[in-house]
Image 1 (cartoon, one colour):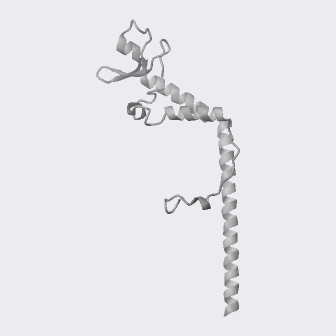
Image 2 (cartoon, one colour; image 1 turned 30 degrees about the vertical axis):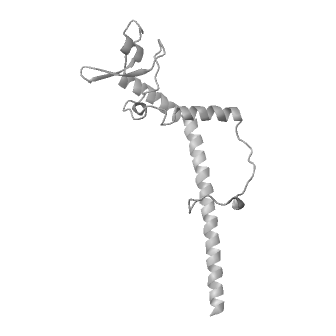
Image 3 (cartoon, one colour; image 1 turned 180 degrees about the vertical axis):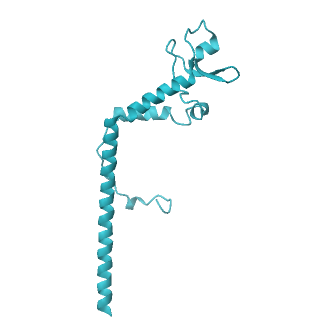
Length: 160
């Protein structure tokens, strides 16, 4: 199918069994979570939002989603509880959180976890192994090509 973009006839199919690497229950749960995040199911305002944490925050007081609100004509930006914003302060007693403060705190925490020394060492070791493995495969391929070229030259000399 690769070059012609047509399905090969069944006579050319190779059928084999493959052991699952995860159980069916875990697979079903993962597929359900992925389907829930599919672009067709997530509103475009969440996917394309210029606000870092859009769609990820929930109010600590009532559990509603948090959204962007502004003050002073857009000069100040806050994450505010949707319930409080839409239904008033009597619905939810939470306070608005300055967007830049919360964004910086989340990014700092994420960077701290993502770039922890042990994690970086593990990532670098994995990359080094992959690089060496790929490099050795390339070197082996080069040796094969060189050997074929030598064979081709010697047989060419014999024919002269």
